[in-house]
Picture 1 (tube, rainbow, N blue to C red):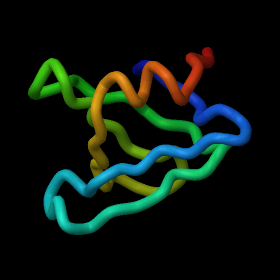
Picture 2: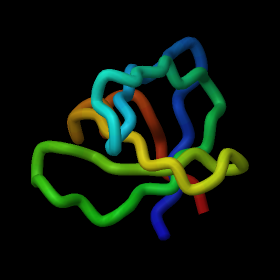
Picture 3: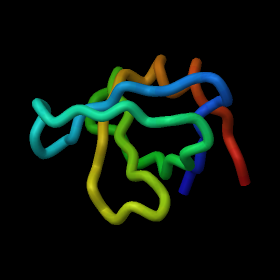
Length: 70
């Protein structure tokens, strides 16, 4: 599994995969567990320590606002 961390002094706006109207700002330091994409332009992930809820955002946002760990 690919793990990435939201960069310091940054955040990510994400939508819940199961209900796109549910949105969340993901804060710096949060560890994201990147999942297999269903669309090349969209990243899917869970947040470590928060269960199995899947969140989505544009792939470019993940690349620009996070860094890999592990």
